[in-house]
Length: 292
Image (cartoon, rainbow, N blue to C red; front, top):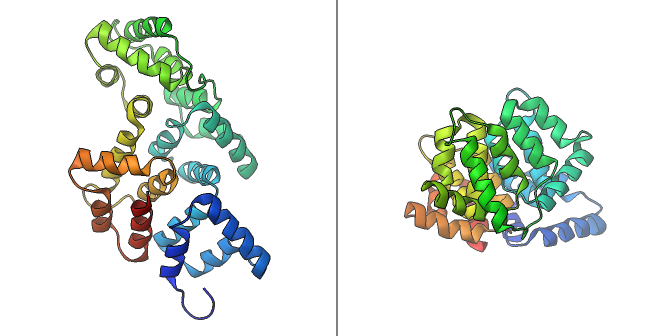
């Protein structure tokens, strides 16, 4: 970065080929050795979508997600899909961590901010998720799953109208492991999948949020592959979603997302990203995908 011009390739080679913990150590050493703030220097040298990728990689993962949540709610309008994608894929411990860091970063509770930007049953669902009442991973009760499947049926397909609060309560409180049992029991009880039930009974943001929970329970990489495909499908590219998923999942399950993407769409994620992006931005994303 020193002097005139920037060697972007070296920045990509170093930062896209390290894990987040190593990048934090690099930033710390940069500060100690050179007395400079690496993120500030990168910001002044880079621009556009390439900058978004690199600066995203430099933040601790939880801070990055908090920033993305803030961005989804800041200014006019709300990016509900981004809220759904981030909040509905977390377990309880992760959610507590995000809430705590969000309040430290923005000096306001995440639940309160989400409440001002959403409404109705969708707001109630997100509030339940954020306040972290979900049972810990591994909490299962097969007998209770039978009752819960019946409650979901009675609240939806088994009656005229829909009692959304029952869907919210079960899908926001039960552990992902428990929900797997509930969905199996629902199929046994009704002969229909929980996805079919949601589609028949719900609509709008609440439908998308509950569907996201169902997909993350059954197979999170499937959910993220779909989101990536939609971000690149048709005219133009939703770069914000593309960057957010690749950066935030790069050390969680990006390899599984790659495998699932290829299976679902009969082409590799790498080739899809290559055809939708260009320049250093493309090189950075492809380096992350290649290293997954």
